[in-house]
View 1 (cartoon, rainbow, N blue to C red):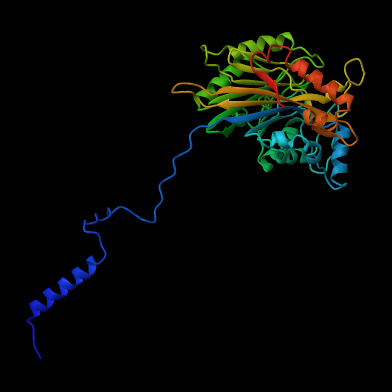
View 2 (tube, helix red, strand yellow; view 1 turned 45 degrees about the vertical axis):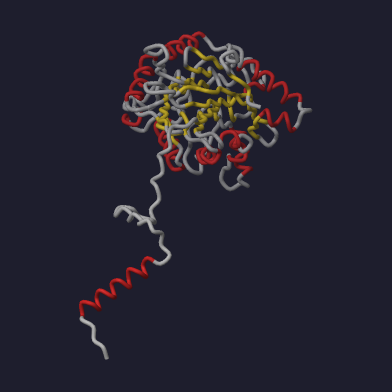
Length: 397
């Protein structure tokens, strides 16, 4: 048997391995992958930039005794269910990126007693219904905020906290009173502030002067600027103001609206949007400089309403849903702006049963209802009465 030197054996083996490795391979040598390349890795996603978003707002939630009774019936006598009354506007509210309500009353203790006019204590189940309808935040500053003193405020805000509903306008502590509700959508931070003209003659508790925010021009502007300084891209102010049952905004509303829309410099308002409640009936929308003013949204949910003459007045169950689409800044140093302004007519049908309706949809379903058509025409006429249409405001179809 022939023997080969060890060196020759190793040389031959090496040559054979190199030949085998080259079978079927292209002549050009392949570059080795970078040591840092991981074939199982995926590219890091690009962070999404700011995007347009929608904000909707609705008027006074005012559960009279008959509304509380309806909620009891809707729950089958076991508790209180307000979701069925609000289900008709859930498609509008629930599809918005942000939705703001006005909770006019305070809540009573679990199990009651619950009361309607003139001193309200509502079932705390209202909070869950608002959350399930799609609301993000509610303002709680109204002339009824002190109807049950500090306990009513505490129960109301505790119930909202329990369901994840943000709030502003009343407070359990001085620290809470100084903070806006901070909301986020489309990459923007939205600060919501809220104030009321008064509290039906009930004095603020001496040991809790911060329990509810009262309208004061300088304070509102200071709070709005502070919110901007702390990073808010958009500032929304909810105001419980005006004269009840008056279609047109009163002098106080007009004067304050112009002050709040003036801004520190042209094109840079301190406040982007003002949402008004209290008058019980729908009032106009107006654009002043770069700020949209909704003087009065009207009552979203209420029982039979009687005007100062003592006559039942259907306008107390008519209202509008405000819907604004905000667009991101056009460039460095620019602000978010309202790209689209709309309103949706709304009505509480007194039934029975009591139900809040998207009035445009209700007219489409029941074109023969003269009461629906009359309500829609009135809401449209009043909302557009101060030049909102020329500024781009439209009724949603």
